[in-house]
Structures are given as structure tokens and as C-alpha cells.
Image 1 (tube, rainbow, N blue to C red):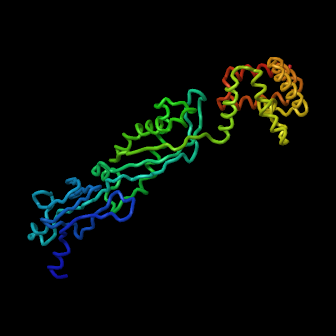
Image 2 (image 1 turned 90 degrees about the vertical axis):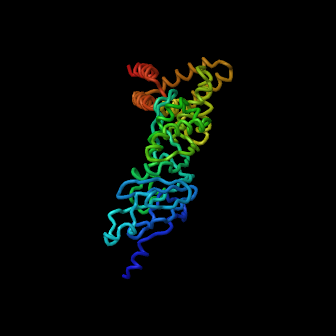
Image 3 (image 1 turned 180 degrees about the horizontal axis):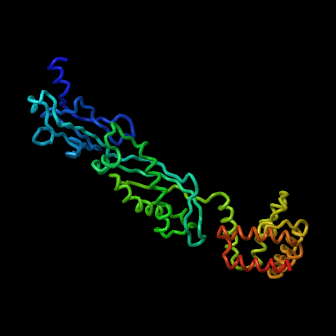
Length: 347
């Protein structure tokens, strides 16, 4: 290779980066021999920052603007200062560009339900999803902690780590917000604000800033949603046993009309298939309720249900009550009272 061709190849006049496509966070400028011409230009556009790395150490960070590069302003020696070393400079330099614009519409979600503590329901498993936006604000820290000496580092390589941070902090965010689960659906902005507060310091450790966070939906798994719907229905009638029996009757009649006779007072409330006797209980409850005597309706239901109970039915009921206690539907005291009542029927 001719001497002039060699020199021309080694010297770079202008260093710049024009992003192509979306998703690039860090990009290393390609330099033959890693040498920069004395007096060359560095162009850093808006939404970019540039980092000079000399002999493996970060030498300087440049924001948007055009800079004239000289040996007085940069810790870099070019071949012009090293004729005596036959063009073999001991100084090696890299220039890394970082995109500082917002990376928007980054999605997060719970692939599996996560367990949180709730003051109304105890332990609750929920699903949630939303999106967020972030940007690189500390390229020096991002370079040393994340992107390193890679020729290119993209959003797709980082999204798994960031999604994990979101999921890791959901429980703490709900706890710190003080919002009960039943109110989360109408306070998604407050939930998102609490989640962002939890995530800000974690993102800063990576040289990133969380620009926005949204929570688009919070929901229960289907089986727990059904239990919650039933508990809400029970809450609507309060402690009035007569109204509760009427509520149960109203819930059971459509199921029997569809041929699902294993539901209703004995089925839904106690887990028993009482057959024809259950139809009699429903009729007595409905009649007593319509006559304005809810106490008689409750007593009639209890008496009829007790008359149809068998030892196997009682044991099955105890197992189902245990499941309800484990899910937080029944308290320890409620379970103990029901257990004692059913065990008496075995004697």
C-alpha cells in the first residue's frame, strides 16, 4: 500500500451519525486504525450525545453542537505527532454516539398473575399491563454499565431488563399508593404515578430516565373475578340474612332453568347437591321473602338444608369451606363457626 493511501485511510475529517431506523441507543463510529485527524470536526445533532474513549477510558462527553478537534482539546494524539513511531501510535480512541430522544410505547405486562397484599381481600393475584417511555440521559454511565464496546446497542436488547424492573416494583408501588384493589381500576393514573416513583431510581442506575408510565388495565384471574363478583353481590345486601337468601335464590333460579341444578343455596353457598329438596328450599325462601318475612326464609332454608345433609355432604362442605378460607373469602372465625356447626350434625 502506498504511503499516501495509508495516511489518507487513517485520518478522519468529520465524525457524525445520522440515525437510520428506530431503536438504536448506542453506536460506535467506524474508524480505520482508530485515529482522528488533528483539526477534524465532530458533529453532534439534537437528540444525540457523543462519548470519546481513549485508551479504554472515557475522555470526554459532548452534547449537541459542532466541535473542532485538536490535540489541545482532546486527549488524542494523531499520526501527525508520531512520525518517529512509524505511524504506530500508542493512543487508541473510539467515538460512541448515544440517542437521547424518547423511546416511546415500550410495553410491559404480567405474563403470570402476581400476588399483592390488599387490606380488603388479603392476598390477591392480579394481572396488569401498560406502556412507558424512557431516554438515555447519562451516556457515560450507560456506556460503562450497559452498552460497553459494542458496535451497536438497541432498545430490543434492553427491553427485557426494563420490563423485569417494572414487574419487580408493581407490588411495592401498590403498597406505597395505599389504593385498595377495588379502587385501582378508577385510579390507574395514581397507580402509574406510584409505579414511576418506584422505578425512577432503578432507571437512573442505568443512565436512563423514565419519561412516562401508563397503567392501562388491572384485572383479576377469571376464577377470582367470579368470587369477587359474588362477594360484591353479598356486600350489596349487607347483614340482612333475608335479603341474602333472596339474593341467592335469584342467582340460583336461572341456573336451574338452564339445567344446572347443582347450584343455588346448597350448591353455591355450601357446595352440596340437594336434588329435589333444594327446589323446595328455593320455593320456601321465595315465598317467605315475598311475604316480607326474611327471618322465616332464613330459618326455613337452614332447616331444610340440615334435613338433607349426609355425612359425605358435610365432609365435602368442610373441604369447600377450607378452600374459601384459603382464598380469603372466609375469615378464620367464620370458618371455625361453620366447621363447629357442621360437625354437630355428624353426632
